Length: 532
Image (cartoon, rainbow, N blue to C red; front, side, top):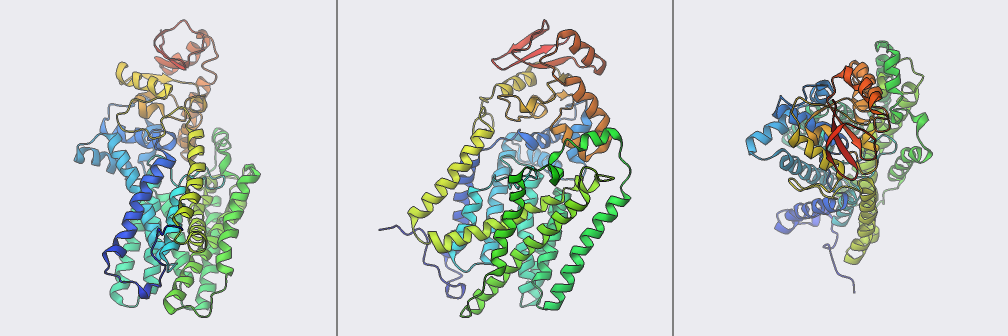
């Protein structure tokens, strides 16, 4: 006999709103799933973009850090309050930066899952459907978003970690706004929606712009007038295309050097995506479209009919915004475009929300029709889903601890070398590493600057990303990555010729590199050497 995990699904009108059990269930489930998500997806605070943000926060906490190439450290500080607020939390809470980053990471996961529960509650009447949506989200938290170079939520904290739950809360609020029956409810919903969009905007302006597009589209689709919906959606989509055309036409001319940077960002251009990445665009739209096409049973209660209408509007929002983004990308974001401003804006990032709507639909359907109240089914299915993503994360970060706890000694040899540097070299030291060091075996995309807390010449990958969205950094990036190309395979004379004009005084080489320089630190993968 199967074990019951959830109470029997009942319509909202039959539930007891003031029941402690009913009110506490979402909080308990989301808290449990936050722990589940951490165990499945791991935590790597200084990997990939996490290292970029962490270095910026460290610079705010100690301005003496990163005296060289500071523009690459400060690039993330220009339009976002994320780094200043995080630095303020470190000072106010009297906690270490690693501890604050972990707390923010867990809080962002919890907030995202809770916001999704609220969104599911406005689209599905049963607890099993809502739990299915949230549990699938927790299991698929690090699923890549097609070929955009985004994943739903990173295994580290960035400004996107804040903008995502804000977007979901704003979608919840706009549904409440359009369905509100009293002025007081309407005002509260409007304030919540505006507040969430504002918080997203001051945290991550680009993602907030796409969030605003989602919210506006959903508001139109929830309008009671069919004619209003038709002409307003047509005007909105046309306006998006016209705006993209205007921005592209008015964009300043680009230098040949910048073009070399731009074409290194393959994920900007649909023509360079792999076939499976293109499927990653089409499949979510097709899955979500099934919700729009599904017929509503004529016997639905009024309350349930409202939820069905909400989920159809949400699905239509995803299809409309996703299709519009594809049209804009195909028209204005290609390698041979006169300018690459639209490519820099990465319109396909809006698919982050398309994917979440897909997960909501799939998870709710699984919970309501397959899993129901059978504990063994829930455990089996989500153990499989979680196991697959756990394997993917271990394959992505094979040389690092799955969860990199604050103050824990790193197992990654590169991180060990970077930590040695932070304790044994002066703050004004300038380092050089292989231009593509984050792709080398055993490195796991761990950020040198964030861990070593020392200046370094710009690298090919992450600093190249900074230069691609900030053209003024192009010259410095080109010089830096050229000087560091094949650093571990060159001879000492070539290294000195390339690095001395840039005032580099330390280098990080692979252990197999041949050199006569003094190398006070060495492990099986990395050695740290001082230039004469």
